[in-house]
Length: 141
Ligand code: ADP
Ligand code: MG
Image (cartoon, rainbow, N blue to C red):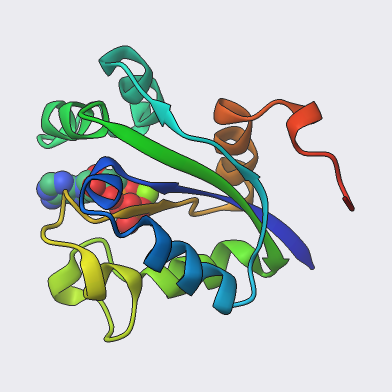
């Protein structure tokens, strides 16, 4: 089934100029980019995006990190996009990520891990709509 997933190139990715390399890897893995923008989230917005983690000890630091600079949300389309993108980026902690994955290649810590990827169909829909309106995502164009 063709699916859509939400990716975010996080502020560390943009700051370190890995944007081009990571997008190249995403495209070479067969994902079609159907939405892309650059945003800077304030703390409130980043906190809403990661609300599911608000009780976790790393939440405050995560919100500071995600609101520390520009990031690039992407809507990606592919067969099995959600699962395949999680595989492409690797484990949350780059020390545990498989070789060749985006996080293994570019991430420096469990927090500063370069990229976000939706983890379920339901969350993908919610996260895509967090950043993109329907008219920005016209199908089959
Ligand atoms: P993933 O992004 O792989 O789905 P989670 O949803 O568990 O990981 O966590 C969301 C984000 O919070 C991670 O990508 C990472 O930036 C940060 N994070 C997760 N766990 C930790 C941790 N133990 N310490 C610091 N930051 C963390
Ligand atoms: Mg997650």
